[in-house]
Length: 120
Image (cartoon, rainbow, N blue to C red; front, side, top):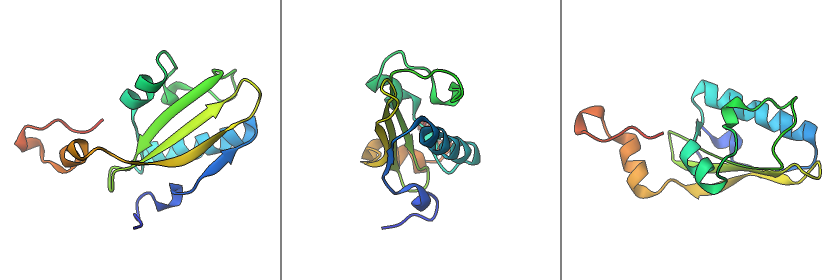
């Protein structure tokens, strides 16, 4: 099944250089700014405690040795990950990880009047 909102991101990309990481990250930042993807800070921080927020990274500056960032599509609930090891200068990937858990997917579609929290 395809999603017109996030289908362009539904491909695995092997990250093999710092330049390629910067290009992929720039596309992700633009997608978050445009509302195509949402940055999932909770899931990102849960996997790698203490890493800087993806939204605050400067890719021209030195980067953390390991980065694990999660994003999701607000339209279909597909979850994506940017999982990178920068210590050796390359190694990582952008990939589809699955879907939001059903309880979060329900909250995503719930109206504010129902008393549910909006998704992150």
